[in-house]
Length: 462
Image 1 (tube, rainbow, N blue to C red):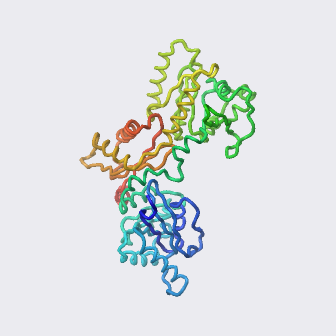
Image 2: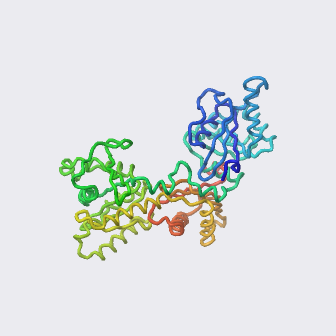
Image 3: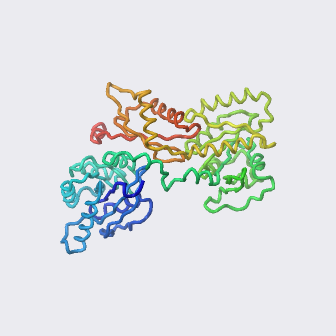
């Protein structure tokens, strides 16, 4: 879609309410100079903005001021008026912490006379100090304010909902474009697989790692961008680059042998932090233990892709029975993620390691997958028709639409009304249906629910 077909959104407000900070967040770059001095932005700036899957031209303007047309402030106001004239939508920003000022009220009145749709943004809305200013903003007559923090990125899903209300959902061809901040599928495939292998001390991690990278491989100092306590060992599997995220335990072999039972949870945490895919290595001769499930749960809570490997498989007698037992225990113990790959292998002989690496690359692809908003909402409509949300107390819960907020892990936002009353069982239904119907088996999925309930009702309930 060319830029000319994109909507134009102009950011308006008195000086020093955070307009340039919001502009920078939507553009994704520090294009606008941000300072506490009023009037820093003197000319309007344009940039290509993006919020989730929605693209638009965003215009940052000087602070609106009452001033003589010949003065600098007057010319700044003329630039703002010209920007508004060419815009499809205006975002009027106030400072929720400071509360309303006479200038806010004056320019709200001016905006109401301009016949342009306006979204009122109560910026700096994080924390209790902003609550009074947020509710005071209703007095401006510009509708329900949207509480955001441009500096910290809070309230962006609510802003997206407000933009959709005025501009509609992005067209299908638009949403198939991967956001610039996200890797394309081709970039994912070409990039080194960031792989961590974790597990209890007796799982055979060192033997398996040595088989993968070569016993005599010299492991040197930390690579740029990785902390001193975790290093990346570069190697290749069938011509595809891999970086094994290793912790201090692997590098300091002598110390590991003397302090085997004291490997810190921090080492595992560091490996998970730097990884895309985490292989949890189990000792087949010991089966699945509670500590293994704790590690798996930690990996999934961190939003990483997980592969579980049964090591020392060549030492197992009744392999079929063991495999079924471990698979059932994982299904019960990791109920939040269905379909985690379970691979059998032997670090001693190398058997099954190709399957392990193949599964790791495949699960990374799923973990990095984006679905178009149009495709998502077709699935969403079918899922709601198949199993409508409940109506507790006879009052219907309305689910309106869904969008994918991010990848790695796949994260979605559902908009609707009375979502506080939505039972956990329906949340699980949506997650499981999304996983089954759209091909996200084995990866963690996040769904956030955003309600458009009247905030005064929430305040009264409190």
